[in-house]
Structures are given as structure tokens and as C-alpha cells.
Length: 172
Image 1: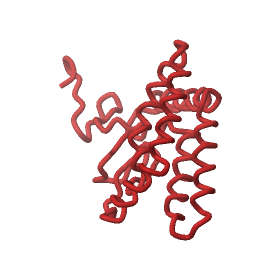
Image 2: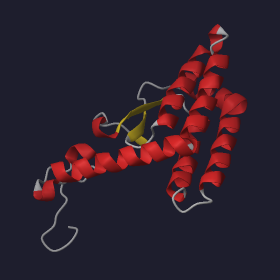
Image 3: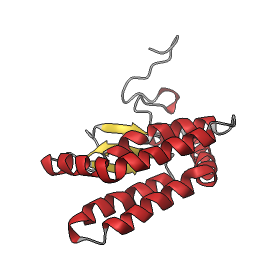
């Protein structure tokens, strides 16, 4: 119970809102507003740092694809480049099939690239936090660091289409 006569029970149609927090479960007027805000935030993000972060991920992805054994790291880097370009409206979920290989790969990733990419996120966040408009972007940038450090065994999906039963790692 949120307030007098307002309930957010799972499956409840009151106010057109369910407790999942995703846009798919919001009334049409609120959904349009949410999608508009996501698009606006993504455009601001792209202009004020997202493009440079994506270029960094893409560059490392190219380097990682030079050797056959490091191609999985390159693919993860390309996936993160796409996420760094347009992060709002995306959710990171843990892959249920990830195992020991992903854990070992994440250790290697952190030592080779994750630390440097995290420093790039911190640097970009510091530059964004100088302005009032950039503060929410700086916070989002800081929240991307955990996924930057350990991207293997994770999947980036639209917030509207999170698979049932998935463990959400982080959502924008």
C-alpha cells in the first residue's frame, strides 16, 4: 500500500502501474513521457561523454579481436560500446549459463582492460559533474563502472523486455 486507496500489487491495474518498474507496465501517457525522457537523457549522454567512452570500448574491442583467444573479450567490449552510446532504457542482467569461464575471463578482463576503462568512466564523470545538468550523467557514469570491470556473464537488454526470472544487475 503506497497511500490511501493506492496499491501496487503485482498484476494490479490500478493507475496502470505494476511494481516491476519497467516501462512496459506503465499507462500509455506515462510510457510516452518515460520514453521521451530516456531519449533526451541518451542524447545528452551521447554528446557529453558517451561517444568518447564508446570509442574507447570499440578501440579495445578491435585490439582484442586481433588474437583468436581474446575474441570473447572483443565481443564483450563491442557490447559495452553499444551500451555506452545509449545506456538509458537498458538493463544489465546476469546470464544464467555463465560459469567458471566467465569468472576467470572477468579476472583477466579487469587486469587488462577493466581498470583502464573504469578510470575513463571516473574521468568522464568528473568532467560531467562540473555542471548541474551533468550531475545525473556523472552518477550514471559511476554506476557503469561495475559492469565495466566484470562484463562477462552479463547481458544487456531493453528495460521493457527483461526475461522473466532474470537477476537484474543494474538498470538505467
